Length: 159
Image (cartoon, rainbow, N blue to C red; front, top):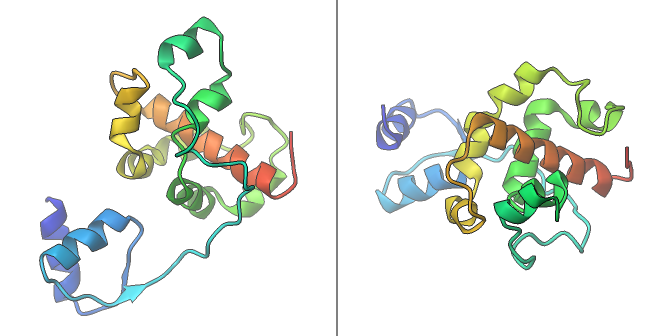
């Protein structure tokens, strides 16, 4: 089942649709498909210094050499949409209560299950520009954990 089939099936139900990925709504608009939309996310306030678009690209080779931390490398792929998705799936309370710097007190299965969501939201061109051959589940989990850390730090907790 492709994106068009999913969109068509949702629209024929004539029920409110929760859109989590902007690309789905853009495809539906391009195809002239009308749909009711329920907005599920409130904007998350982030520190002004967090601007992944303006930051220089950290290359995978430089990260592997030890020139950059994992947080710097994977954090460059984080967008507001990824942060919102991580907060929605993991939960703001769980992120803020985590006592581990790498969120290892949140079940690994929860992080692994987020891979598909991150895959849909991440900028594929940015991944190539950084020298990453392929974005694996592990890669997606690292990006999700960087997003959780950005969220936690934006809300006053650094662990």
